[in-house]
Amino acid sequence: MTEIREPPALTGEQIDQALRRFADAFSRQRRSPILHSPSEQGLDHEDVTFPSRDGVPLEGWFIPAAGSDKLVIANHPLGFNRSGMPAHLEPWRSEWASSGNGFEVDFVPDYKILHDAGYNVLAYDLRNHGHSGDANGGVTSSGIFEARDVAGSLSYARGRRDTRDMTIGLFSRCMGSSSTFSAMTQFPEVFDGVRCLVAPQPVTTRTIIERRLAVMGLSEHLDELERLIVLRTSIGFARRNTQEWARNVRVPTFLYQVRDDVLTHPSDVQTIFDNLPVAEKKLQWIEGTTARWDGYLEFQRRPGPMLEWFATYMS
Picture 1: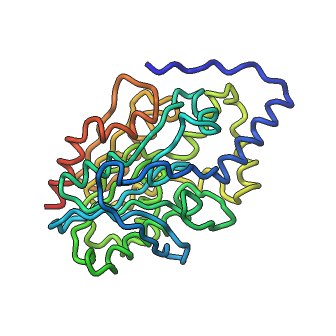
Picture 2: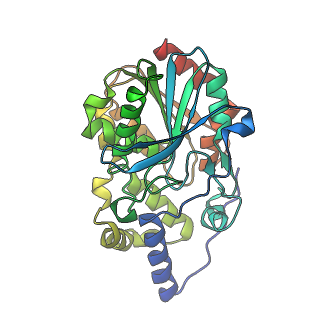
Picture 3: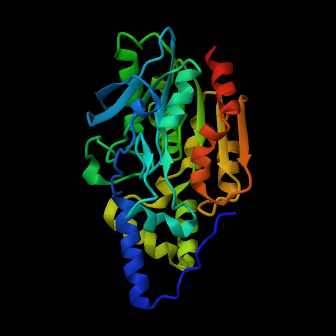
């Protein structure tokens, strides 16, 4: 099990400062550097740029698989980018080590696995992340605005001469999952023809905020933190509702989640899964760890079930 540090006792002023720092960091995420490239895995790739649904410039990689007519579009978690998260380096380590997540996540091996399984890959940075454009005053919205990026990626794929007729599947992680569910709620028409979704570790904002406060020893200050976040973003927790957006999913969907993840609760993911109104759905629990990051690394460690899902519904 991952070691969790016990939070120190704080004075009233220290609590106020901690809540303000949390609200600042959550509302406008620090951009993580893109430290890895597909070339590290021997993959040819094209640097691409395309507009979100509302015109925000998005940056990404297109990784071709010769002879394939199948495309997987990858969406990343909050605070990450298309290449992952350098949580082994400062200042990201200080933000995440207390929850047992002070180690790197490199997503490029995921793209190698997908490529070698016969899939073209489009991986890109959501707005306000990586090299993509600033938008909405830099505010992150847990999927409300980022849904426009998911829609833009689908429009881009359908507009490229070499991908427009490809079979499409989605690989949407954490906030990428929430953004995908939100896009299915706001723009259902853009998902016509999308065959399936693999969605690691979707989470409802209120739940992960509650759990992060618990790690900090500040559980009783949830309402005050929400007030501070609303003052910075104009968006409260009720509007950031992944559980409700899940009711609008219309494609076969595979969820997986670290069961004992200290940053969420199994009931949240279970409710999201239960709310999916499709018959073709699966929920897989990851055991033996409390680190959320292990969930993001599950695909490159044990890709079989996810590849089977893509193969089943993209054939």
